[in-house]
Amino acid sequence: MSFKALKVWRALKRNPGKRRGEIALDIGWMPDSVSKCLNRLERDGCAKREGNTHHCRWWATSKRPTDARGTALGSLKALAENRPDWLMALIEAKKARLKVAKPKRPYRFKPATELERCWPVLAVVREIGQTARDD
Picture 1 (cartoon, rainbow, N blue to C red):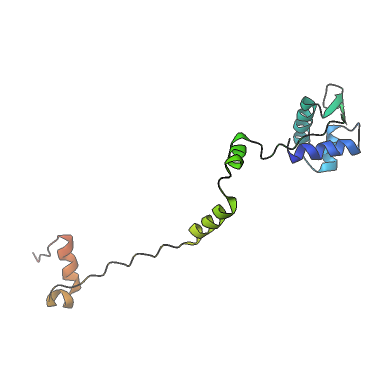
Picture 2 (picture 1 turned 180 degrees about the horizontal axis):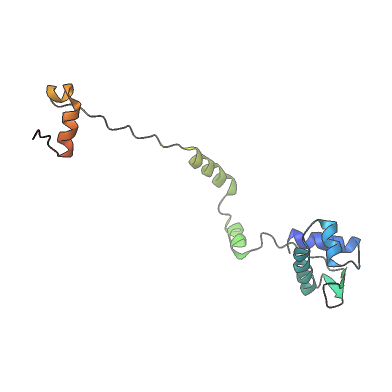
């Protein structure tokens, strides 16, 4: 279960026999969210209801919802293998994020002849492969 289920279960423990709308007002959630959470609690045996419509009343049972965060198979496997060392991974990630690539220097034309040095426009035209004609 998640922290949401535990919050709804605690609200039921404090106020037994309330409707989902009343629980939603107490917690500050939308009634649909509370309804989904109550149905999950009922399926797991942590809550019971009296009635079949959305006007039914809910009670918490003595069975407390379990906190299953971090128990996914991938999480357990990583914990068992002790990899990755989260602190070192965090430090390395920060270093990688803070590395800034040096910008490439812009291309600078180096004139080969005195004419190109005096008239750089002619050199650009020559590099592009065009010839300037006066027709």
